Image 1 (cartoon, rainbow, N blue to C red):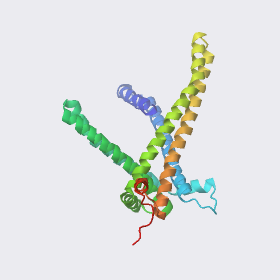
Image 2 (cartoon, helix red, strand yellow):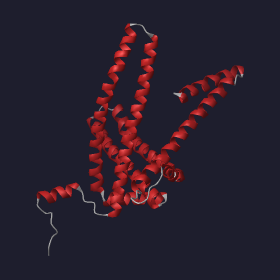
Image 3 (tube, rainbow, N blue to C red):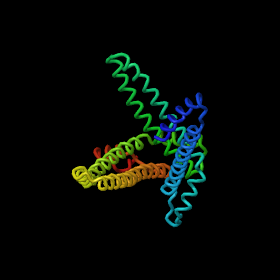
Image 4 (spheres, rainbow, N blue to C red):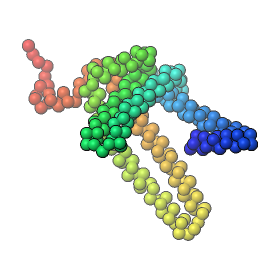
Length: 277
């Protein structure tokens, strides 16, 4: 909103400047844009530090050695530049994949053809799989960088090797994780609706009584609760996902990871013992 409003102000100010040379609005717009960019950079830096700290805390956890919260954050801060580059590469890769799917979509919008609709559905499925794969590779690469000291190129190489070697376990984990996150989202939505009921009652009461003070208090309290609830929920889900993939990366390095599909087949065929010559 800040960027949109500031851009409009800059455009209007430039039109005024052409006639009356009034640069006051331009300077105000520049200040607002710079302030917003600083906020974006601050949040991006905090996100990169948190990613590194979370991966280190999960994957590098040692039973006999306790690491303070400050030390964990410092580890994430030292790796902020490679983590930021990794995130930028992943974002660009996802957007390129999204651009690839937009090409069939443009044909669908231009031509009402069954073949084009089928092509769009296929490309959408491919995009979804590619996007999920890129996200998983990003977390694997992040683990390689933080826990193994790998460079950016080495991290991508190791992440790709892990996915190729353990693709079935990775696929099973992604499916199970998606189901768990969906269940968490459903429960969170129900809880959110329950939390909304008192505010809806107060909102209706303020409208009926034409009470401006009660209306403002209701809206303000609702926004505060909504923001806090969203932060806690999203923070939990993100931490949950990163923790799972960090643990999986650690287990892959230790060996002994068997796909659940293999376990199921062995259980159904009674092949649970070690084969004898």
